[in-house]
Length: 456
Ligand SMILES: Cc1cc2nc3c(=O)[nH]c(=O)nc-3n(C[C@H](O)[C@H](O)[C@H](O)COP(=O)(O)OP(=O)(O)OC[C@H]3O[C@@H](n4cnc5c(N)ncnc54)[C@H](O)[C@@H]3O)c2cc1C
Image (cartoon, rainbow, N blue to C red; front, side, top):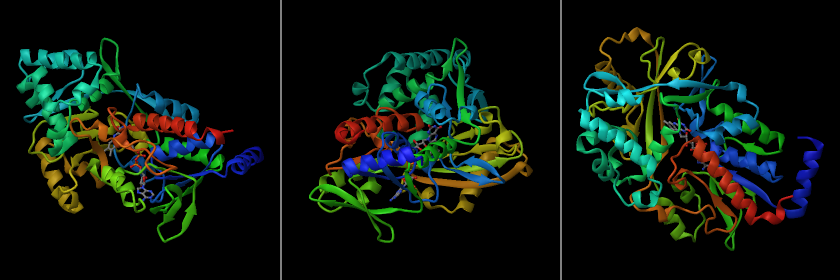
């Protein structure tokens, strides 16, 4: 930290006595710290694992950084791209044209351009027309509040028809919501279509996506580096077990092991049920609200191959007997030279917390996954497999049931000085880096407004 910065921080502290604790060092927590430290606050981030990044963390594999989960930045993700520019890592950002396809009845069908959509063989001519109409319709509809009252399948069947729903939408919804599709409102598909269509360029509808050459976590690491320069403390391996209050106002936290740290302001970026588990006594209504928030987890085996599998970034699977719901070959986006010339194929399955798959041992997952993988690719040569690594996460995809947007928690919690932000609150946007970093900006604006007397 520079002497000027140190003096400046001390001036803020002397003037206000306020210091902020941020719980959770995922992209949300680190963006908040990055922004608030620029305003001169004293910040400590508490992260329970041994590095920042949360869901966007990478692991080291033979010297290369490999994303635990597949992550892409869309060409329309401006908040992410601005952060990349601000932190000086723009030279690591690359744009690639990506392609997707459907696996239907043993065959692969490209599904990218209007022509491919209008000639998609599993659909009849009239059905293709209705699918195109649905996509167009989603662009014209601007009021999501009405859509929030309609079950997603009702809305899709109404506009696209039953056949299109069964052959296109249902597999896509199953991929994201597992058995919970029936609880999801039309808002979800509306939001998703709007996001995906923004990545399309010109009349050819080429899909452009971006990646950071050393992985998505490079951005979090770059922000963390600036945070250090601003005097932010990042306590790793520090799980928070309790929030402390006095007469309804935050006073600090208890770390795992019992150590206490004092804070005047706390910002939780934890998934809602985890925040509920560390609340003090006496906030039963808030506790229940947090525990009502639902999430799916993800089971995401990664196949590291010595050769390219397909030309597609995503292959959507319509066959419900296959346990994973997509084949995501990220090295059709990322240049393989950044991952030791391997080819990375993620085989995800979003799962409910009580799914038997959630606790199935890795070797059994491998047997089940590979048997189905071979069914899809009968000519696949097994000697091309370098590794099979199972990744899992419990709180990934928030489920906002039909017409419950009034049950979204507020940034300002009922506890004075405690703020919260997580993906259940980013609605109707979807949980992704763009939405999370934009939401962090919104939180910062609200916190600054509330505490404007201490901003210098
Ligand atoms: C399979 C998959 C694919 C995805 N694809 C994309 C994509 O292509 N593009 C995109 O933009 N986004 C994608 N995402 C979504 C993106 O990863 C998330 O939206 C984002 O990482 C959420 O960040 P967060 O900081 O809100 O939460 P998290 O990353 O979950 O961070 C929460 C942090 O809190 C910590 N924590 C938990 N409990 C405690 C405690 N008691 N004390 C202290 N710390 C604690 C955790 O260790 C974690 O680091 C994908 C996610 C998955 C799983």
